[in-house]
Amino acid sequence: MIVFPNAKINIGLRIRSMRPDDYHEIETIFYPVRLCDALEFVVSDQTIIKDILKVTGLETGSKAVDNLVIKTLLKLRGKSSFPFLKIHLHKVIPAGAGLGGGSSDAACLLKVINRHFVLNIDNSDLKALALELGSDCPFFVDGIPSLATGRGEILTPVKSMLSGYYLAILNPGVGINTVEAYQNCRPGVPLTSLSELVELPVIEWKGIIVNDFEDFAFKKHPIIGDIKEELYKTGALFSLMSGSGSSVYGIFSEKPKLPAKLKEFVIWEGVM
Image (spheres, helix red, strand yellow):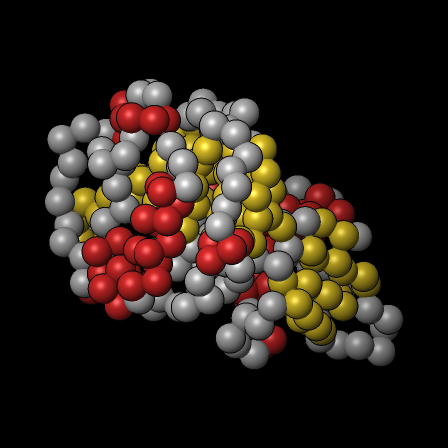
């Protein structure tokens, strides 16, 4: 069985407040994109008494035993019984890029194992399991454009406002520590909800749809801000860092002629 966990971008990201549980209250729009990993599993023979994970492609920065795929299997085995698996994860979505690659791998595995082994876990319980693995994991269970509040687990579907636009996602190859990013942001309640702002034409989003992590990220790694600035110079209608970074995307009315200094950072581009 092979599946293709897809990435997401954040359209806006506001840090509203610190919660009593030490998480942050956020507001963002998770939007699925077609940049994908590949995840394959087969049932191990009866002599194998544990799950085996092989990771190829881009570096994840962690050992296989610490990968969210293995943690997902442990969570599921606490709920249901199914055979041990041999899993091959081929990474195309960069780790620590603000694109939700690890969370997508985890949620996709939850869904496919539930379906393949007829575990009969309903959608709400799958999302509850996903939340134990990561705040953005529940989004990938359905994977439709959604306004996310709470920790990111309260999801309200929104329209597909990027249909027909051309999207370019660039990654400078530097990492942003999410914990450090949260420690260096200033929570605040926005006057207007993102759900209202995205009703405006995309060309009007610049300056009013923001990512509260950008100030910190741009100071720590100026290349991130430079990429955003260059995307606007190249004709982007809107550009923003995704999540806590370090990927930046540009939304265009048509395929742009990206300069060489930007092309080297492109990890996905295409019509939405």
